[in-house]
Length: 115
Image (cartoon, rainbow, N blue to C red; front, side):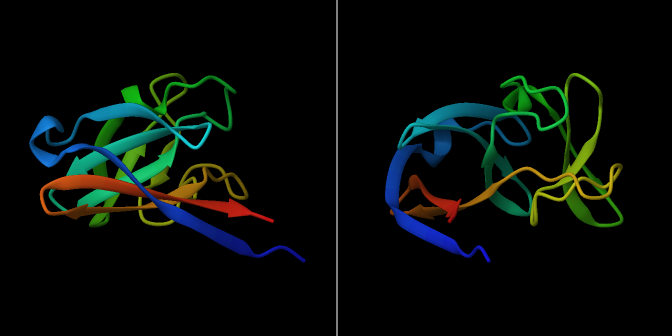
């Protein structure tokens, strides 16, 4: 049985450094994440594409499907729900999702790791 442990918040950058609907990669606690600012909020997921195995999701295409904010992988175009990390095209495939927030104009991320 696994459960999720959350670690402390890590400051990444000022909010105004993130372009809307464009991703950036950041290294947080040894984990490469992809960070996105969209009209729906801030999202942080692992940068590793679970299908291709490459660290490229920060270069993906932000969009939506049925009102759900999504990210399409730049390699094989699988689409991931940014709220849950679930792949909408391949059942059982997901990318790890992390907590993201803006506090006092600064974007912060808190890693979530399976134990």
